[in-house]
Image 1 (cartoon, rainbow, N blue to C red):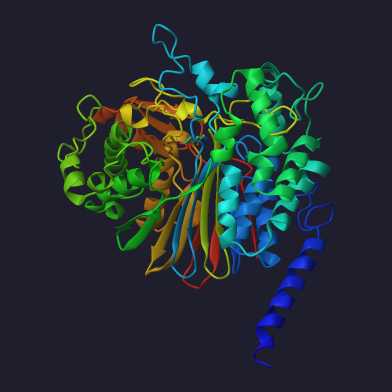
Image 2 (cartoon, rainbow, N blue to C red; image 1 turned 120 degrees about the vertical axis):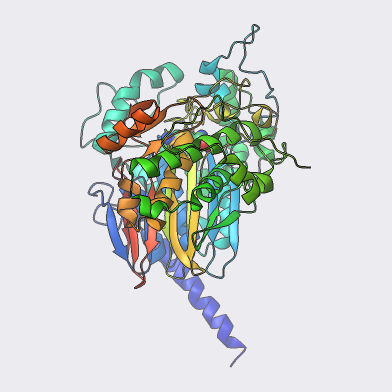
Amino acid sequence: MKLFKPLSICLLLALNILSHAQVSLVGAGKKVDPFHYEVVKNGQFRKASVSSAHPLASLVGAAIMEQGGNAFDAGIATQLALAVVYPGAGNIGGGGFMLARKSNGELIGLDYREAAPSKASRDMYLDKNGTVLSALSQFGDLASGIPGTIAGLFATLPYAKLPFKILIQPAIDLAENGFVISEKQVNDFNEQKDIFIKNNNHPIAFVKEGKWHLGDTLFQKELANTLKRIQKDGVKGFYEGETANMIVAEMQKGNGIISLEDLKNYTAKLRKPLEFDYRGHHIISFSPPSSGGIIINQMLKMIEKYPVGTYGFQTSKTVQLMIEVERRAYADRAEHMGDPDFWKVPVKTLTSDKYLTERMKDFVAEKAGSSTDVKAGTIHESEETTHISILDDLGNMVSITTTLNGGYGCKTMVGGAGFLLNNEMDDFSVKPGVPNMYGAIGGEANAIEPGKRMLSSMTPTLILKNKKPYVVIGTPGGTTIPTSVFQGIVNIIDFNMSASDAINKPKFHHQWLPDIVMIEKGFDANTKKHLQTMGYKLSDRGSIGRTEAIRILSDGKRETAADIRGDDSVAGF
Ligand code: DON
């Protein structure tokens, strides 16, 4: 009898999965209704939470968990759905990072960042006079690194429970049968029309005759076919065969350099997550080739010595201190950080107590520092991305940030394949000291080399309290990403805010160079005035980041919050 028990359980499981396969999640009147959905900014759920940039993607993630999937299943399905319903950043032609903590405490850092093609070279975006040709690193096929997302999803699969075929089906349905686009999406498509036409020599789904209107449905048949090839052939459905041939044909038309070999050789990599403590909480974040984990580690440790909670939320005293730690951390980013497989990033020193205490020695309260005086420390030692936060009933925490880099990436679709390519090559330092599209500068550590992964700011992060899951957080926003995560964490830990308040309060950002403080609308006017009298140059800015956060309350409920700055939406049960 005993012998047969596991067998019957297996059989039941298999039947369960089979029956799931037959239950279609997407369609009018179904769990994920592409024609009637609404943006939900907050929810308190007991078992499963998803917060992402689009309501349909969050609904897909929650429905997958309702069908028996865990947070990893939801992570895969939500990313694929975002590639359809949020094409400005959701992607299969881009890359990202997944940070997770399994319910048994195991940490996973998965790097599926794009890589430079084998024909890439250090000065490929300079003309013969050494002038930077940023149009080439930002638009068109040459701007694209080798996409990593599909490799990342398949590398996530061993942690998931459901078959990939089921996880990709909602995305296929959404692409094939269409979904009603939001007002923001209508405006976005209309604004991008000219640039889409300029950058594509074949018709693409986002361009229609005349204008897009509210209530219009977007159909993406070519994308649906690409997703079906991936469903049928797995990772090879993207990196080899018809899809790969289409990518290379696109490269030949558009002066790109990604080859069949580049695609075939691409792999996702496991990275050891970065861990540190902050005011009794344990923070887990992403290590290089993301700069995000190191930057938030540095910033939080630099402010930990000051009783920020007693200074008050966004008082000039608090904000000045936070600006100055941002300045110092971002100076280090420019000099010391790059792909660890190509450049020795001095992580230990950069995050050591001794080094950070030294970095703050020239901090003067009430007086603006200067980025001419604050350089990167000396080491002695051998707008468009998208974030998904997920938590399941077992306590698996999944934090994923993924990107095409700029909105709609390089704005060029792979002819016939229906997906946009990234413009991630611009995240390399194309020339030392010359700012990229986010104003970030870099040097040798982040110079272009074949196969190298460009430095990122993406900061998927997890927080444990009393060694138990507490917060899942992350955001898009280019170089402002670590700042947004930093401020979200401070808001939760130092100012005891709800997840929703923590992510939605106005933010400020300093990234060393340019030496200005960017200030989001709605920021306290008195604090602004006081900062100016201290000598800070302020620059108003529309919005900073679109953070998604989940916080577990002491009664076990999961406060699930989506950023108010976009169509971001939560789902769960
Ligand atoms: O990896 C990075 O740091 C950038 N490619 C992220 C770009 C981004 O967040 C744009 N979103 N608003």
